[in-house]
Image 1: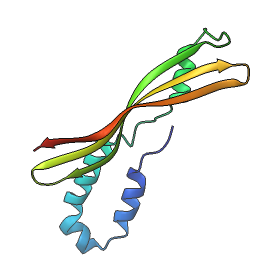
Image 2: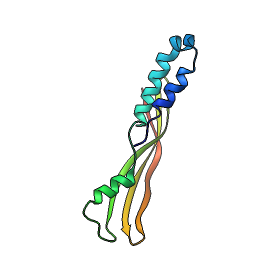
Image 3: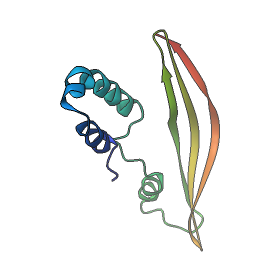
Amino acid sequence: MRRGNTHDGRKFFCLLSSETRNGRIGAIWDLYLDFEKDFKNSEAFNPSADLFSALGANVALNSSQAMDADLLHAAIQSKGLKSEFKSTHRLTMTLTSAGPQMMDQVLSQKWHHSKL
């Protein structure tokens, strides 16, 4: 399981002077935590392990398992508009004689805009 970016963010903010931290750290840190939640930085993303475990007892040669994943790549927010670049993928694992093979098919990728 990977460690989220929260640790690195806290390390950075500890380097700021106490005067700067007391005046602005709350708002900046809240913004950082909002983006961390939107990007799911504290969640593990390991599709190969998920697919392999989903195969379970079905380990016959050429058996396969698929899952769809929605990924957020970028987010820009202003006072009245939030824009996010997202993609949807179909990830497929097939068990072959050479070992497990992964395929990533991009189903869609586009900007999504919403008014605030």
